[in-house]
Structures are given as structure tokens and as C-alpha cells.
Image (cartoon, rainbow, N blue to C red):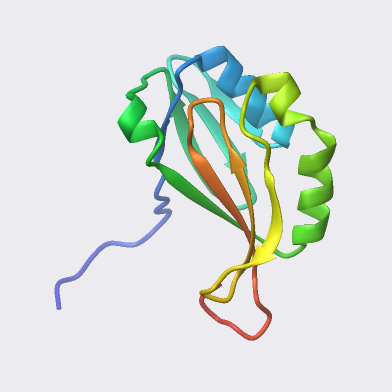
Length: 129
């Protein structure tokens, strides 16, 4: 086995933004912390981060998915439902939490560029959630 240095590794995906300003406002409304606002924006939620870029390709954006694992999906859902995301950002209506065939309880939110977020509740008996 090859030695791989360790330290402060963090994998951060690049998300597309059709309308950079609108997408930044969307993520701020969701409560994500914007930690950089420059030619790209970096957002943090919990221990995760992503880079929002002013680049958009329809097929890519509409097939891109993110997963946000949470302890309290009902609390997140109440927050999401209170935001009127379709009215404010022109996105599809979020889908309420439901248990999926693979066992996770998931709510779905689509961002202004078509990126689908799976907001999923951790299972207390699962070490990989």
C-alpha cells in the first residue's frame, strides 16, 4: 500500500450557476454560510463545503446531485418549507421527506440551476450515514 499524506484534506465539488447572483442568494436563504465571494463563491454547511461557479451547462447542471446528511430532517424540512423557494427563486417545489427504497428518509430541493439536493436524515443504527 502506498503512503498518502494526511492533514486537512477536504473534498469540495464545483456546482454550476446559471445566474451566479441568484444562486448565491438561494444558498444564503437556505442558511449556508458564504465564506468567500469572489470569481467563485465558497459555501459551508456543517462540515461540508462546495464552490459555486459562474459556469452553466444545462445537461450537466440538471444531472448534478448533492447530498446533505442531517440529524433533524423534520427541522430542516420546516425551514425549507418556510422559505417559499419557488416564489422567491423560480425553482421546482421542494419534495417533502419520505422514506426511499434504499432506507434513507429524504427531502428534495432543486437549486436555480437544476442541481438536485438530497437532504437525508442520518439513521442512528448506521455507521455510514
